[in-house]
Image (cartoon, rainbow, N blue to C red; front, side, top):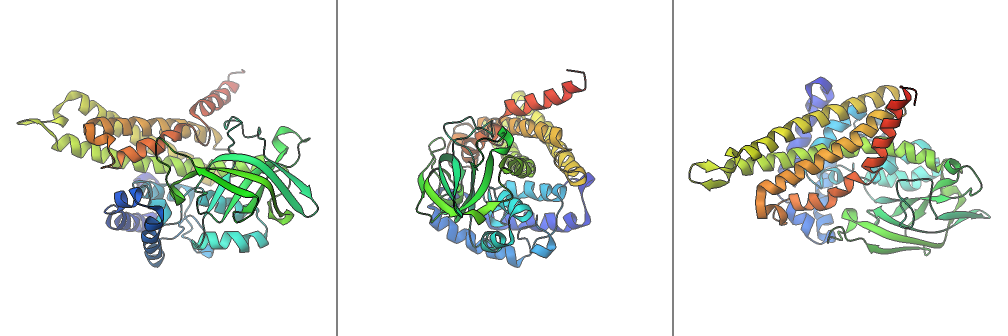
Length: 398
């Protein structure tokens, strides 16, 4: 928690969340990550029930919806604490892609869809996924896709191929982005539609191996296909042709969620690096931390993590006060900057651990595999840098 951004609510909540995470998840996280998903899920369900009983469930939702009514800046600081373990967000029902789907449906879904899909998702009774990225098209261009949804009477008929559909394994439904208005302008061609995953026209082809790790359940990324997949027209979220607009509404807050989670990872990796440097003996009377190169890495990491935190909380505060459109430049900045810091800190921590760092005996290898995508998903570094530079240069007449 940062004093500059602290609130009375956070001063009570942050220590409570941290104690729960450290006491309940840290001791079992490695076993859970490397065990079968069904066994892990059973253990996590117990912890989720405990989180509910402690009043920690869905803190980002309003109090009327069963949450804690946190602002984006407040939730960002809770997200950092949760991010210090790969399972923290899941235990409090704050995990992607569910949190993004919850926020999207809360704003734009019909009351019928909210009752059928949103409320069970908020309760933690089901999981969801989000099908947008396609293997045949550049993910950095969200208006370019081949999946179609054609109206046939009162139903959409969906055909297409998606991948990196996170957490599809075991999910109850997906929100799929598909072209519904092919003759419209590029930004008004697509729509978002809910598809229950027991639909006969849906196929989960495989869990994609991420640097050798397929994962399972919530910890998976799937390749999926829709073949003559029929769903009611009423499963449309928002209006026809609003898919791109809805994607932007979803991605802005999502990037802040990710960045604060990454800072949580950085802090944990930093702690591991410092502990190793202070305890690993090179020879009698000399520890690894006495080496100037190691000291440089520690100093640089501390500065970069601190800078990242203030940048992200500033962006979150601006979004709270002025909306995501006004914070667009800040969001692009933190997306590429914090992702880069994350990979630097993880790489240094692995190096300081030596051979141990590339084994699965610590969390570092898990994060190194699964967080390399931070510089790619939700807009690659290059796209965000280009967007930021163009916005800056407009002020100079270019």
